[in-house]
Image (cartoon, rainbow, N blue to C red; front, side, top):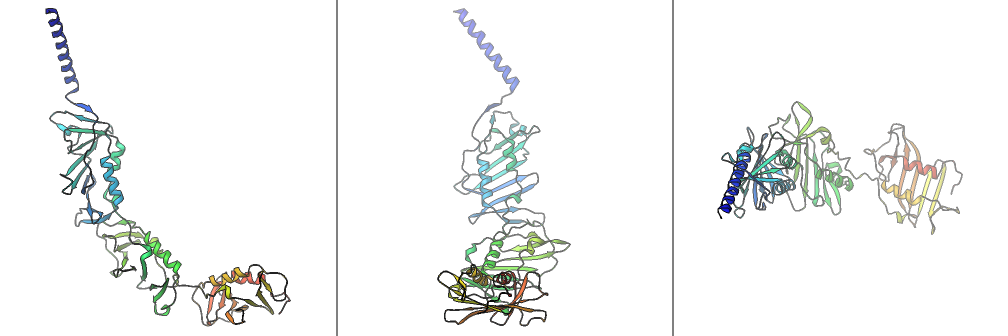
Length: 445
């Protein structure tokens, strides 16, 4: 019996000695793996982020988010991209620690540098979400990342450096740089204003756009495809950089103003561009969507400039192709009368169909003038071909006459429409017709 007690005493002494050695060698720190956060961030109202480069706050506002940035002389409040804010929240929740460290001495988390963290995040919640949550992250010289949160103040967590880098985002990362936010299909009025350039206003009537300004185009059709393409370009427009400090503009009057209205809303979407003193390569922009000014390079702004001519409906005329029963061409001293038959088109008195007539008629409807039309031609213009389109009763539908002119740009010719105006158009259709109906063919009808 005495021997058994003696043996047990020896085991106890050895155990105590081992425990003392472990304590002296490794301190009182315990390492386990535990969950980083247990609470949900669904009720977050604000996220305050502090980094060595500065601080900012992401605030929930009206179903979206805003970025609040304190400045030396003024405070910035800009729209934030909700998707990026929510992704940032998810990163905070989903941090996966390699291990958690607890039971440290009196120095607590400070011994890991968490008293002066490289990243500090404070989350506030609504009434249902509970007390604010503080998160601290820092890294040591070896790259090991340590984290602490106020939900588990007795633990320090060790993380992968990659996640730490993803959380060290500047305020600019969250800025919504869209100049506009609207539904393209709801736009029904577009206006462009330049103090010393072309200005215009178009409105959607029925299914197409019509000019209200300038006066000489009032009531005339605009090009629906050009207007829709312009609206789409505005929808895709992004600021080059948001301005967080005051910028001195060169003029009080905007160099370019663009406005457009959505259906059922009298307040337009708008953007103004100002030249900047001592900075000829960029413009200062102010839009109805962005709450702070922004910068955009000259090339991008110049692409937004459209003249009234650029968006004008430039088709010379329209007609119903199916109503055309005969096509009369006068080329040189020859006349061709081409008639529609059951099998196609053929020259009167001929036995073979002529391919390509329907395509030529369609190309007539697509013909656009390349510059402003004239009432009179210069003496350098030479008449080349006349075309007349007739219906089945022989009534004239359309008449057009082509002229060559060395003063026109290469690849263009004049075309006189029935309204008496001379339009500069592409000469490709004329050349194709000249090839189909040569001036030297002796076949008159």
